[in-house]
Length: 141
Image (cartoon, rainbow, N blue to C red; front, side, top):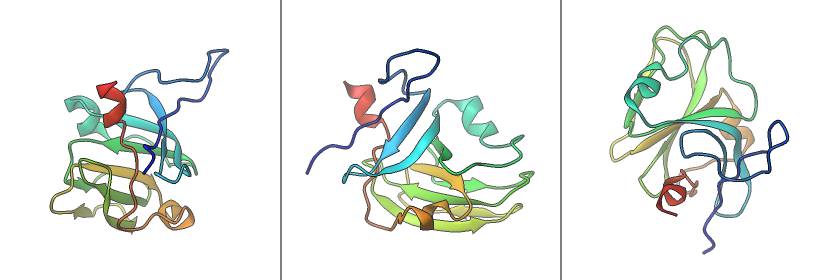
């Protein structure tokens, strides 16, 4: 099975490539299809705590990967979102669609959560059992 890649789109004249495991990356499935074009990686304490608080919305193609995180909440958020719970190796364990403000969602054994715009997981066909590259393999390179 081919290993999915993480690609950073070229910005301001930069060549495309992997900029940082904590930067903005594109997440792909193992079949090569893009799950999230502009995904922010939140893997430190403050960015994980802040999450999407303060944002007015998420556009199609935007998201946030929070790790480690077996659960999320939408307290103080202004919009609904999809939460895709992932194992350490990127397997989709659960998809919580259209999580409205002031709710919590969790998944046993989840290592990370990919937060997407409400309805985006369905539009992109993300389902339990899919494998998404969570940039863990990028850090090891």
